[in-house]
Length: 294
Ligand code: SAH
Image (cartoon, rainbow, N blue to C red; front, side, top):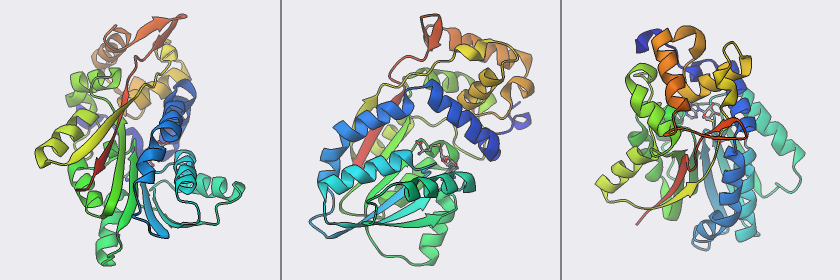
């Protein structure tokens, strides 16, 4: 069945539309901001080893809103330090939005932005072809590991670029969340073999544990209003369902059984709570971890 369903991420226009709507209907970016302002500063304080120049890589940066907030905290912790910031993002539209955002912000002179319109694996090839030897102080991959073929290999590659005291920050949905339950139940039908798609923090933790990598884990309690998903034919509900299932035009391409099963699962108290007549994803649904080099 999976072969007849197409992955949402392959249609950038629709992906960006449903991602934007997801941001409007969820506390996703707000809970990231809370983390960035309350927890991340201490983590960032420990990087750099006293150097006057820091190397940063953002993988799957989107429009850069979250990246710029992190860079601002980095600047507060390391004033006077210059930053080389590699942005790795395959969506031209999102990279354009990121550049616009940068042009509107004053005081970013301490950062040199290098724009890489490419996927994580293309960046890896590019890096290897250039035989780049520079060590990186801070790498982040926020809500993007679903879109690579082999998340463990991707984590391994980027982890290998970290210098002394370097940190890698990964944000993914938690296996314990409503998303995790939905994806676990329908993995065979929803997930495409060419990308990892249904990966959660549980998978990454198991991988890091098996390699003996030290890491810290945080929970970011984000919620999402999924009310519109239950109104048949509702355009916004369909976009949100695309985002939840990661399937392009899910409502019109999934079999009636799969569609009914997914809706039933979303309604189930294991996956959502009802408050003010809205179905909300329970918290926490995103977990956050940092892994440290030894
Ligand atoms: N980090 C941003 C955007 C998350 S959405 C935020 O949290 O707001 C996921 C992003 O990953 C999208 O911008 C998408 O274009 C990008 N992406 C998709 N496939 C990718 C790949 N193979 N490698 C790197 N980024 C990818």
